[in-house]
Amino acid sequence: MKKIQISPSILSADFSQLGNEIKKLSEAGADMIHVDVMDGHFVPNLTIGPPVIKDLKKYSSIPFDVHLMISPVHQYIEAYAEAGADIITIHPEATNDLQSSIDKINKLNKKVGVSLNPDSKINLIEKNLDQIDLVLIMSVNPGFGGQKFMPEVLDKIKNLVRIRKERNLNFDIEIDGGINFDNCKLAIEAGANIIVSGTTIFKSNNGNIKKNIDLLRSI
Ligand code: DX5
Ligand code: ZN
Image 1 (cartoon, rainbow, N blue to C red):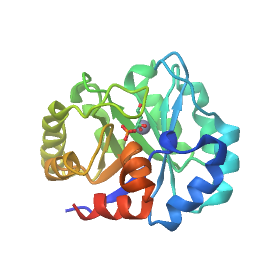
Image 2 (image 1 turned 135 degrees about the vertical axis):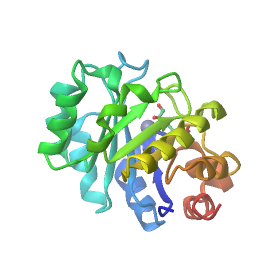
Image 3 (image 1 turned 90 degrees about the vertical axis):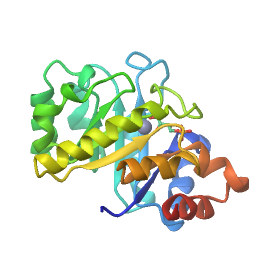
């Protein structure tokens, strides 16, 4: 079994203190920093762009797990790579040519992530799985933090685990959206090994992020 890693989403952080928030997360034992990039078009919300990521990189040396919810994504991949993204995750519906977007991320020597919305099926990415480092399973419809976990995506995780074994592949499975201390266990049991969490890490236990990261990891 792969080691469980925690990727806190800074969507729930205090945006006026982002540098310090990232420093605190890495000191609290986060394995990576999940950065939600939204364009007000692919999803109905707007967040941050490459210059912000570039400056935030100064606050921590742990990997930046950059989740691009922008369309068309292809033309922006390079800017996020240059800004310091270590993992670049894209949605198949946000590019005209998934293969060439994957190739571009690979050529830039970044880890390739591909994300499936709750209604998106595995067959959208099945033929690309051997070139993908990570599959990000959305357990809410992307756009906002604080939404309710959709347990129906657990079967998709189980199917991915089966395909990974059948094809002798090694991609990580990350889950994102509505994770709390109860459903985290279900996601891990299904086969997820990277856990994204915003609300639970920043708001539970009076915002004790170390305690919340430790709890999610030990579930
Ligand atoms: C949703 C984002 C998630 C979200 C997670 O579009 O991709 O990363 O911020 O936040 P919580 O844990 O609050 O659902
Ligand atoms: Zn995300």
